[in-house]
Image 1: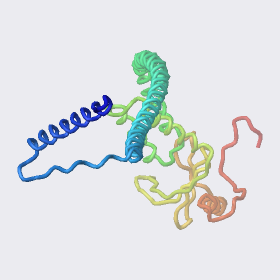
Image 2: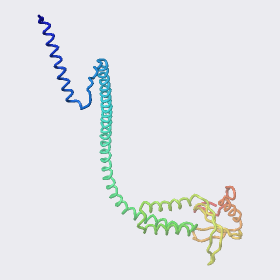
Image 3: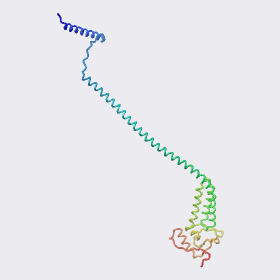
Image 4: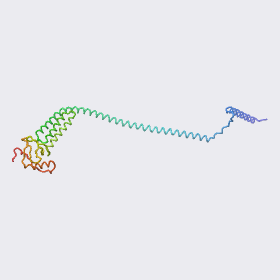
Length: 276
């Protein structure tokens, strides 16, 4: 008589065989015709763990790279932000300085406009003054010792012509007038020798003139045959005796820097009331 446990094992065996048979039939239905299915080998648990770890490492590297990239981008944006803040502060200071500068320039424009108005008023009063100065200079040349007459007259004529020019400023006109006065002033404290023509008795003769400031103006013929001096009282030339021939010749040499400075004898009139 068969025992109950043996019956149970037989039933389990039959059930397992039936399951394997059904699975084989199902696999045979899915497999292509003519191919025999081969059962797959069992996967090694250690290899699976290694594969999972490698995948985790790759994911970790990728994540770390993303973190590093985000950190670099954050630092770049932070530096740009601070740079923009510094530029903003600089622009704020610059704008404040520009506002002060513009305010100063506006005040300067107002001052210049006022000065221009005053310049026009001064110009209206300076022009008559300059004309009077030229007339005074002309009178001085007419009444002065007659040296360098053509040069001095040409200078005065140039000043009169300058006053009639609209393209020359009043400042330039005034500068030229003052320059002419300075030249006339220099004549009073210098010694000069020059050669020019002397008109006497309806004739012109080339002579050497010697000017001692405005104290004396003498001349001497080129051959030394005649020596004369200008007399302001008679407004004419006076012929000197032969005693002045050598001193005047020496004075001409000194004025031309052909001889060393020295004392010379001049034909000067004594002051009125002076004793002989």
